[in-house]
Amino acid sequence: MEQKIEVGLINEAECVVTAENTARSLGSGCLQVFATPAMCCLMEKAASDLLDSLLDEASTSVGISLQIAHTAATPVGMGVTAAAEITAVEGRRISFRVTARDEAGEIGSGTHERFIVFKEKFQMKADAKMHR
Picture (tube, one colour):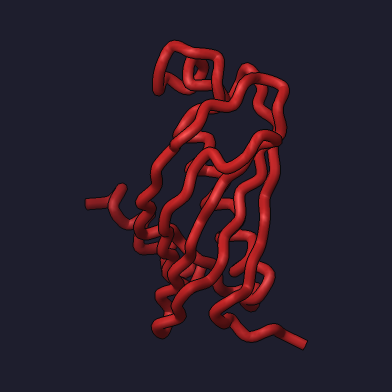
């Protein structure tokens, strides 16, 4: 039985900070700490995975906005968990409150929006840009 997309549903995604997801490695700074782009990606993953678990196989969601603050640094070796909670459902537009925390506490928060699309139609439209 499929679960309905509704306000209040929550999903989490986790990772460990490694040399590969630091600011130095991703080019968003020179320090060996969890990169802001990596935190954004983890937040989006939590939201995307939640929706993918609720959609049929012909559909998926795409991120359309992300507004976040990265408020604390996380060193290599520490675990990070991002959470995405649905705050609004407006047709195919789904809004989320996103947060990230490490083992010491919250490291970031913000809002995220995703839009539900048909996989094949979306991909065909994107691919058509190559033939213009």
